Image (cartoon, rainbow, N blue to C red):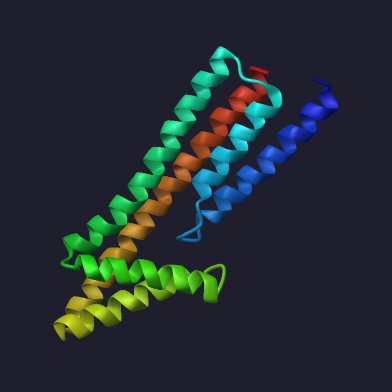
Length: 166
């Protein structure tokens, strides 16, 4: 492959990966999937070797783990504080609706507000509703940090592949 062509492919892939990394700020944006797809596209465009397959397999496992961690941590923190499963479902629907109605950051406030209002109407206790909402927000914050770190590791592994092993 011509060096100029490789440079363009690497630049486009890296730009898409950075968009995925920044997109992790938006709760429903599949940033890790975007990063993974950019790396897959790079592999298809440049060809896979045995070592690039190994790196890609590790990146794939990281993407899957990051997606699962996200769902588990947000739900676990809220449930730990006493939220109901219905509350989490309402938060998810509100988050998706908020992201569409007020992009790109409307999802998080909509989800938090939905949990607060629903839990207050369910329990008639503002203190409890606030604690549950804080639990969900804390879970989201922890999940964001972990997903962001996983995204950085995925991009770093790709950089190892693209710069040193190509």
